[in-house]
Amino acid sequence: MITIRQAGAQDFELVADFIRKLADYEKLAHEVRFDDATLRRNLFGPRPAAEVLIGEVDGAPAGFALYFQTFSTFEGKPGIWLEDLFVEPHARGTGLGRALLSRLAALVIERGGARLEWNVLDWNELGKGFYRTIGAAHVDGWERWRMQDDALAALADGV
Image (cartoon, rainbow, N blue to C red):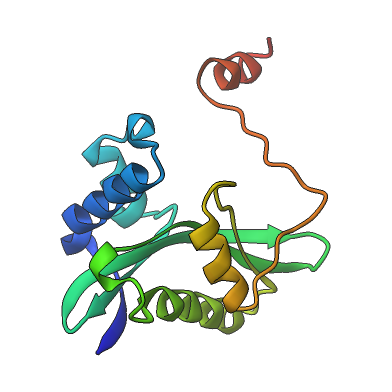
């Protein structure tokens, strides 16, 4: 039986573990730099920057989705950005990933939103195939750009 629930502060260690497992799967473990206190505050503090769903199979946690609100000026409505989706290898094929995304789609609608969006690594054919089966499509014409670390600090300083 699959259940989806909102994560609470008591789930912090579980969420942190899922983040590390996802990073390992994505071959990006070297990029995980969060410290527990900062992540805990940003997920479960007085002003959360993101929310987390926990997916369980037969009562045992087996996956998560970490997400936050976005806004589309063209639509004039909010949306949800899915930052992380991970299902334990033993639970893949159970419908847990689809159930997590289904709950996120319902949240978008409940909140009056227009879009559920996310990135997928270009080599992740398994993920892309799964996303196609649920009706998702690649957004042509857009590239992802990022600013962080020294470049972010330099720009903030007006350099």
